[in-house]
Image (cartoon, rainbow, N blue to C red; front, side, top):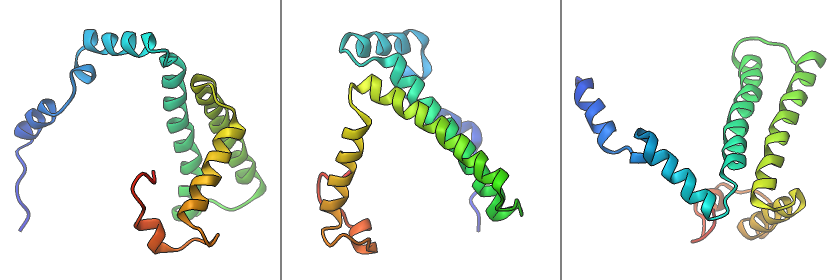
Length: 136
């Protein structure tokens, strides 16, 4: 039997477990000011985070339509995917600028992480799902 949800209570619950910075403009500005004071380049980080998510969604939308809605695999859709991937990369570079790191360093770090996770050099489900402490 499905339990009936009281959405008014749920709304109160959601509000109770939401940070002040997510609900209150002054707290939000305080967070931005704090992060900026710590040298985070918060405006570029936010630009990158929002953009990567949005453009990644546009990339996924094309894939979704091909997989589930009959959109064809053709040169037009391939080019559209490449364009959206370029948009993702633009925002990835924004993140690199915000973090003061080169794209080469990011990729090298990713390779090192995956070599540790898959020491044999091949994917396996066990190592994918059972990560060592500190393996993000």
